[in-house]
Image (cartoon, rainbow, N blue to C red; front, side, top):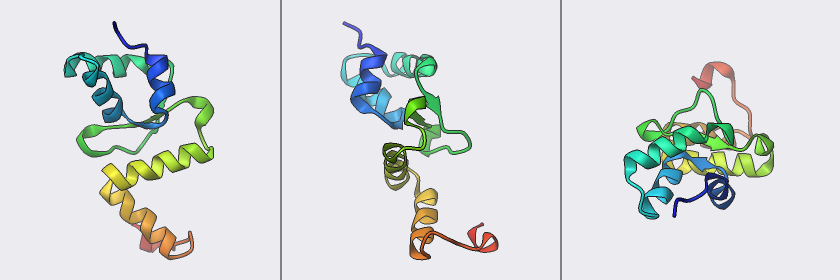
Length: 106
């Protein structure tokens, strides 16, 4: 029985496309079919623009979650697990109390 993408979004919440693909593969779907299914879920979620993770993964979320605490926690978790360069930037900001001069941030 195919898994419903709405149920998948509700179950996994915010995260990287690779997490959704892995979950679909675990239910018996082929990786190619799982990738296509996630690609076609675009009506139910949004991709965070401008930020790409390892293996071209994208951070996806429901529009109603954008900007909330769960959104920021999920994004930071994605940075720490799959975005090494983003992780360094977040650590840099934390070490400086959340602010950094623009010239030093590059």
